[in-house]
Image (cartoon, rainbow, N blue to C red):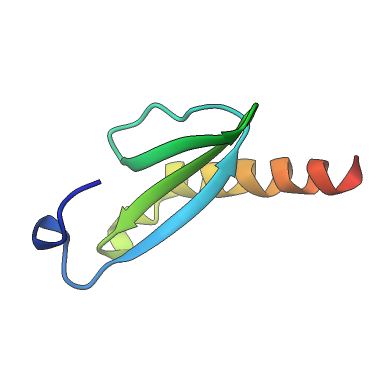
Length: 71
C-alpha cells in the first residue's frame, strides 16, 4: 500500500473478496485471511479507473460471495 502522501486526492479504497490472488498493477494490497479466500484492495482516485476490467473483478467477487452463501 502506498503512503498516504502518495495517494490521490480524493480517493476511496474498494475491497473485493476473490478465490485467488489477483495479479495486477492496479492492486494496492492483498491478503489471504482464509485458505482460498483473498482480500484484494484497490485505491480508486478517479472514475476513469472504474472500467470494464475493474467491473469484471467486481462481478467475480459477487459470484464468489454468492456461491459461499449457497454452501
